[in-house]
Each structure stands twice: as structure tokens, then as C-alpha cells.
Image (cartoon, rainbow, N blue to C red; front, top):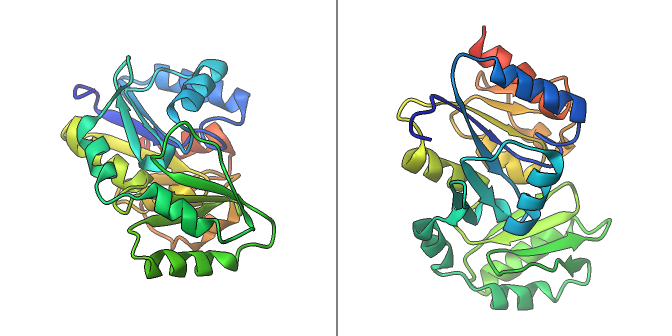
Amino acid sequence: MKSKTHMLATDLDGTLVGDEEALRSLLKYYEEQPYEISFTYVTGRHLASALSLIETEGLPAPDILIADVGTSIYVGEHFIEDAEWAARMKANWHPVQIAEVAARFPQLQRQSLPNEKRVSYTMQSGGESMIYELEEALIEERLPHKLIVSSNRDVDILPLNSGKGEALQYIIRTYAHDDVQVLIAGDSGNDLDMLSLEYPSVIVGNAQEELAILQPDPLLFRANAHCAGGIQEAWIHFYEN
């Protein structure tokens, strides 16, 4: 990965994946470039779910997989978990107590996950106002956390210094080429922090309205095309113009 001068760091569902024709066009376009591109997938899915999607969709094997909304990082062809990042995530993380607080809110249905790297819920329609009460309750219990709402239904409670943006910054510092040219792509609220980093970024055309809060910036491209088509549109904008 250190030898690759360009990197695509992209969310999967609704961003890289979602339009088969556009995805094949993007991959063909990348094959035609004179440089090699490193793929970093940044997803809310857990490891097994992400690997299943990669196989089903025929995606290129990533150099890095950031999973569980940035709380886990897997490296290389064998997807070995980054031990330093895992240790950081465990520090001052109290998922049992967090779940006890969240259980006070009947609008939240807990998602079944294979680990406790995050505590995640599906929110019933109309439950948006409850989010502020949940945040206040977690603060009152002095439970360090990061709370993210995306797609108006997914509620993720994460370790404090986590999230897609924090994880992506870590892997760029640790694994990437010194002068790597990056494009970050996303479509929903859990992509907000990584789209706000100081790198060229794209909000794909089918993005959730929650990303409208991002202010105009020369490094932020709002694509017209959906999913992988928006990624290709942005790549041309930043790296061919």
C-alpha cells in the first residue's frame, strides 16, 4: 500500500455499491489510469457482513477495511485487525452501561452484532427528538462516547475517539504513501466526519439530506451521478482537471 500514490477511501452501501453499471464503469476507468489505486473501504458493517458484500458485489480486495463505523481496522489480504487501533477503542469504553442507558428509550431497537465494538440501534420513525435526551442521559452517567445518527434511522454509539474520520486519518498516517492523493466518498450521516477532513471528498448524488449541513468547500464535491458514478465524476474533477 505504501507504494500506491492514489487512494479511494469510500463507504460501501449507497456509495461504491448501489449502481452496478456505474460500479463496473468506475473500476474499468481505474484500470486505465497510469497509476495504481489503493482501495480503503469505510463501512458501518461488521467484518463478516462487509466481506460478504465485497464477495457478492465482486469488489476489488481492499488494502484496508475500516468496519463498524470506524471502530475496527483490518489490514491486508488476510484482514488482520490493527492491534493498536483495537487497544485505543477498548480504552474507557463501557458498552454494557451504555446499553443500559439506551434501554430507557423504547423508540430504539438494538441491533444484533457479533461484538461490542459499537452499540447500535434502529430508531423508530418520529424518534428524532429523543436523540437529544439519549445524549444527555449518557453524559449524565459520565459515559465517554460518540453518538452518530444516519439515514434517519441508524443510531450508533461508539468509543469517544472513533468514527470513520478518526480511523481514516489513522490509516493514512500509518499505512499510506507519504504524498498519497486521496478521494473520500460517502452518502450518509456516519460519513460526515470523514467528508469533513482536509482531503478531496465527494457526496454522491443519491446522498441522504443529512449531509446538506456541510458547508461549501473547494475540497468538497457534490456529485450529480449516483453511487460509483458520483465517485468517478469527482475523481475526474479533482485529478484530471
